Length: 115
Image 1 (cartoon, rainbow, N blue to C red):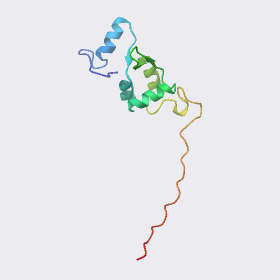
Image 2: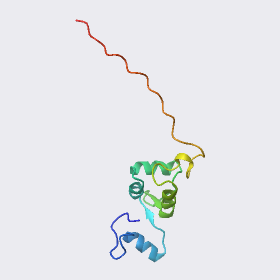
Image 3: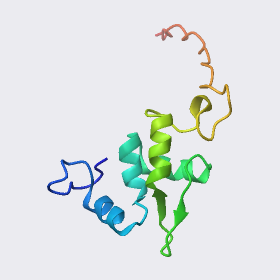
Image 4: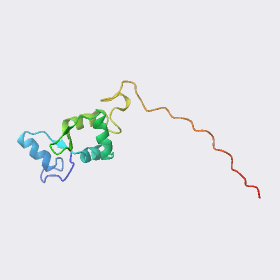
């Protein structure tokens, strides 16, 4: 999957960082912004998922979150759209679904002002 610029000659499938990591035998790591782009959510949401334990992460020496590509892709295959853990997928409870909708009260009739 291409997150940043694609490496020429690879058919646009891998970023240069992913290509280099594979050649060196290292694991590919994603930033919260890159994970957010894959799930089409805000980077802050990805950080919240990490804090909640829905998406494993670790911290760099500088304190920045990094996510293993294998964890991210595993979650994408289980739940390609939406928040991880919803509906019993990774990190969620079995049978847990979205919260039930609450019926709102009927609107009040318009008020007429007396002269």
